[in-house]
Image (cartoon, rainbow, N blue to C red; front, side):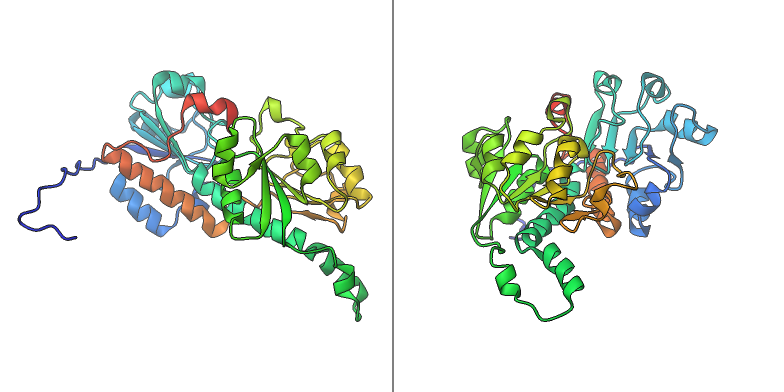
Length: 352
């Protein structure tokens, strides 16, 4: 509906301001995160040098120190240095941190929260490619694609594939989702069009909410015992370390697949390896502990393991989604609006 002369006037738009801004992230990250169009938009939204990126705020160069002193907003991403008391003392104008990635735990300190700095994160945007990777892994695992490809490469001859893969397929399989995080919820959403039964374990989610999400709430052991696929999306916390241990892995049915795109620490790798070496279980592992397995690890060569180098999250062009989200939040800040995806201190004890 177009406004007419008789239409009542709408609310006045808050005139945008261009706050002073400093980029702060690890070496090389800004070049991958921000393209030419992002530089153009950033210049319109803030007073900044898009080519000045602070990798070190504790011992800054004179240029970074001057920019930090005048910055009202920090635009951060992976590798951002910690915002300690000393750093904040050198940033008297700082009012907001816009994080163009997921977790802020690596650089946000108690001093930031005590000072009342507003924080935004692109965790929801970063959840999308992880959930898409997980969906692909679920469908391929149930179809036994990795096994078929490995066998096909070795046989190179006619074979009774329908007979060998008689137990494969995605019809009425059960997928167990551990953790109703942003990623876990998105995975459940992506699974809705398929003829799959979805279970959920999350001690922070009430049964009615799990049902509304589209999953049946169950205890962890029951999920492991009843799932063809177990996919891990819980946050890395002291309470979740080795959440999947020997007992839970032993409960998983023969031929089941474990998918881990969360953190390697959530799975007891010492208990998982024997299950994989014998071939009883399969795995899709985008994360391990340590993150780079030792050179002699069986994970590299086992035919029932798909091992990837922590690439499920935003990569390549997907980084531009994070940049777009961060600049949208910066525009909201400049117009005096609250962040669309704020981070709150009280939520951090049970989130990534």
